[in-house]
Image 1: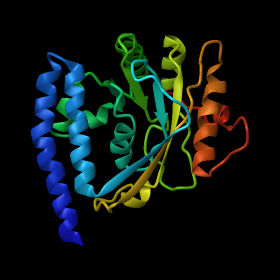
Image 2: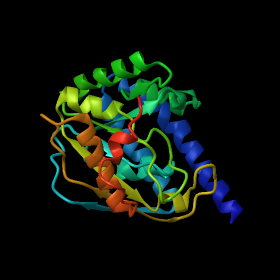
Image 3: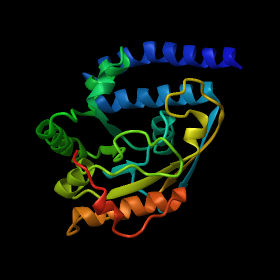
Length: 245
């Protein structure tokens, strides 16, 4: 019912209004503690929306180690689902600059140590990704949607952008591919009414990057996503579809 949908949005707004400024303030002293507050924000919103996250990991991961997590993207709910699936990790998002314009939320995003990318400025985007290396050396993982934006349908993956793969190659931290399924059905692109239900998150095994070519890594990540999502594509397609940051 539309009344319940409005109530869900009210909870989201109030939750963000309270938590986001607190996250920004705490981050000035302890970014790890600030991120733990983000976990509270995520959990409250998942409960309010009636969304359950089912997680399957193909191998054990060390929460004290740093990884470059890469996920497909089909819904705004993907952010909540992936954070919930990786609760024991300290994560920093690689986020587009446009998100910092969202009132309150954007301010917290910028001040909590996340990696902000200006896609209109290639040099700045690359510099931001390299700056993430310092956090990764302290055991912080980064997560990126290499498609760059939400795919419009369930039967397609958008071209993968190069930035996250450049970061992995420069830092030599392994890439962990992730496939999120079911989020688009609950909140399609352009919609505002969130349906309750389940989201599946499949976390793949780490992909070593030392000695690998960028195109090879892109193909492996895209192949994992395509296989888990049922959108398998011919080998080599990742290199053909590569784009700039």
